[in-house]
Length: 523
Ligand code: SIN
Image (tube, rainbow, N blue to C red; front, side, top):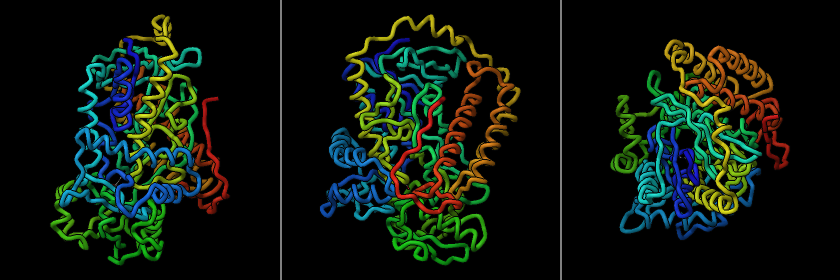
């Protein structure tokens, strides 16, 4: 298969890149799940953008830099905040709906923002933006989609990315797709943790593939934990949006006492890393496995109208957020690090571009400001598209790949190992999640990280009997990617012997004060 541009992932960043590329050639969007499945679709709160009269680009930049703990790349922050408003206006022209009252946008507030600047559509903003971008992308006959195809690996020839090798999940066949330029927009890896807001597909596939291909990854130690993930014992974990706290909800310990003002002057609206650590400390102090989110200060009519996702999801488990306190606890939410790129999405491998959660432009520093990620997907997705188109202008379609692809064992998949060993695979998957949760979570130390590394290496050797990498099934490949990503998080966390933003080391509780980024690359 040949295409001018290969886009891997159909969240906001991937779709926005594809829309840009559709003016320059044929685009193939590949997804391992259904076409519309992505982490972006689950984003509830909104999109942060300078809109209000009391807000300015300078205020939004200051808030982003402050939340980032002093190590954001300022150039990337400037691009995001300055270009953000025009991308959002374009989205509105394309049909995106955001909540309004009396003809004016209702602008929300979230943690660490000094001004109201969150545009939202109820509490399903991500889904609304993805809807608009998906429709826009598919209006262009040059853009096509290929769901249910898993990226086994990127293809690299003479230090250039020339496409990817895919596994057709239905037929089990392995097929190479050759492209002039490839955009990775595969999202994050929340599934390496026991409790996460991420969908099941967030297994770090793109990040691990970029690493194997020789790409530079950066800031992998920074995993943002969202403070309020539903934590009712026996029920699944899901996100309870921070926007509720923006509208007045408060956190209480299991004795029903409000505690955030004891930890931070901004109370419940402190940056996410501070709120998550305060919850861990409060749970330790008062016992139990969770704290309680009290949304009763918000009027019931507003709760039902503005937060239907949270209201309905909690109702499913017998809780009425207009009356009941909701058990919540932090969970892995956002991968701040990833494939290192410049502000045009260019990765260190020629012909490879990355955007969204899979990429690391340095825009989030050590801790992402709430609701900056949907904006990041839009702005840097489009910029990666522009840069990929520019690259394709001066590079011909790779040739002579067919024979070389055969060298990497293009052949029909043998699925027998998967069906026979599902229980064992589930056991390995759970063990990764527990190891990362127990030893590489909100609070870390050299001892916990070294323990995690030993456990991950043992689990990696447990994958050996599953056969060579090129013969694995989708679930086996996902586990290999989870192990790779988990290992890189641990190695980076060991290297950062200080505490900053989302990375807290109890053996090094202070920040050294230097803006530096930890890079990892296959040696
Ligand atoms: C939320 O709604 O709390 C999550 C949105 C985000 O991560 O920016």
